[in-house]
Length: 352
Image 1: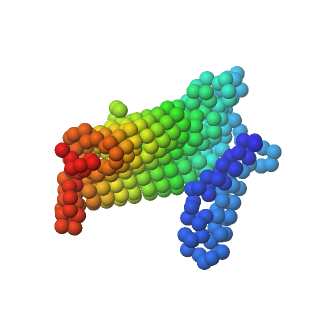
Image 2: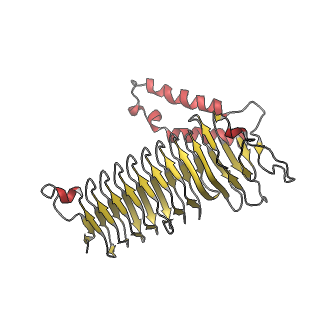
Image 3: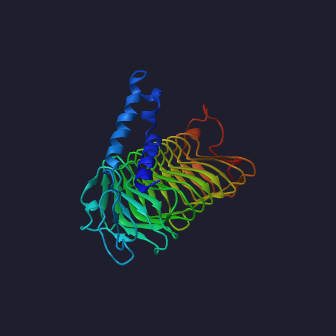
């Protein structure tokens, strides 16, 4: 399947996944049958914008497009085939993209590639992905800021092929801010704000997150699934004022250090982890629990919850370990003991 057809097929699949309210008739405000016209029109319009003229494929761009040093600036819909630092000469920094912003496909044998945003903004009209990594090369693509990706369906999307994303802001995208899969990638000092679904949607094994913030997103600040993710080894990750949970984490072997989750509509931190650890968590003024977790052989230490809408800290499961230093105060369970009796901090048993 050619690159252009692959992109169009991916766009159709992604649009269906990203807009369930348009593809499930029961959610349509129109009557039976009428609701079915919405996905045809909306998806069809996006595919027209994402398409290119017959016989034409996406144009290559980058600092070295032919292996001999030929440099081509990047425009909306181009395919990045090597490193590039965006600047005023790149049309993508001056235009609003009608469809996909930038595709990335690093050919085999090329040196490790870096896309440096150079303080620029890549902007879209909510029809296509901002930066979509199809193949990041053998060592994976690095995306470095400062810089912003805004107004697309998803800001940055990669099922694999990313080595690191640093100092990038993903804002105002209709679905997720940054959505990644893969092994051993790093997300550092990034911010995801006011995206329609999750700020950070991360999957895979061995992801490392430090110093990131997710604010005012339409569902969760961080949605993390997979194995052996390491959060906050150096700097805290913060989920603030998101519509549902600040951090939602599932899987095995995850290590969460110093996460901060305040003023979210749901729980501050909601986790289902086996053989993992949560330590130095801070959860204040969330609509539901401060920290609610379940799992096998999960340890919780030195965590605090205050003024949450339900319980402060609740952890259940086989072989759960209260490693000490956990405390909660001012939560709904404590303020309304007649209707919600019991301790507001429990890690298998009341916190010690």
